[in-house]
Amino acid sequence: MNSCALNNIIPLLVIIIAIPFFIIASIVAGRKRTQALKKLSGYLTGSTPKISFLPTFKGEYQGLKFSIMLMPQSRNSPSYLNILVYKNSTFKLRIYKESPLSNFGKRIGLVREVKTDDEFFDKEFLIFSNRVSSAIAYLNNINIKNSLREVFNNGFTLLAINGRFIFAQKPNYIIEVDLEPPKIINILQKLCSLTSGL
Image 1 (tube, rainbow, N blue to C red):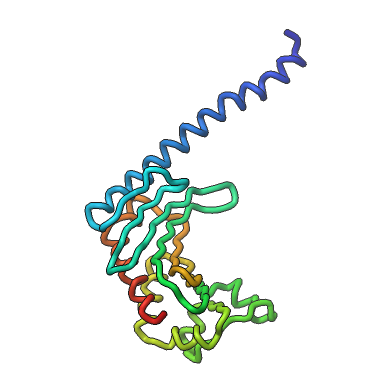
Image 2 (image 1 turned 45 degrees about the vertical axis):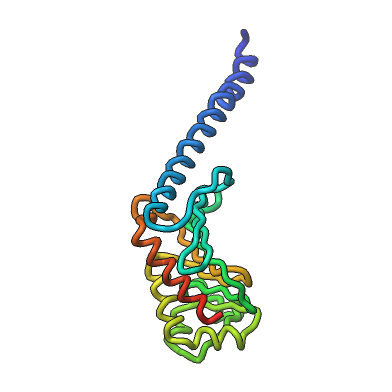
């Protein structure tokens, strides 16, 4: 076999070996995440679906349905812990922690956010909504603000209300830490309390 033919075969062999390895590694990682979610069934009413694209735990807490989803890391995105509590709302809302980048965007006029007339809260969070007056009325409740702060203080970087559910997202979660039942229950309590103003 000449060196030209060998040079053509080597990349093909690497691909043939790498694909099964990648598939096996993904299955093992998915099982680890699913097993971590299954442990929640000892503390919460719910279960992991037998067929699911993502490792998910679905259940009911304080009379509200919820889902906990573990999004794996991808090439352009970190891993995410997503917690959803289902409750209809008449408006949509997205809240982020303020950052130097968002402050810069506001200074040059690229970012237009909702202002709640609470100077400290507005400096702490970046808020967007499709119905400004509804969002302001919702966020002017001190209990809502306290629950929001606690969610963000637990490492979540986004809280959204999309009309059908409240959604909290934490990037780069650690299974052994962030899926501890007391931590998950605490966030579920806060999200359930956030539904009271909807």
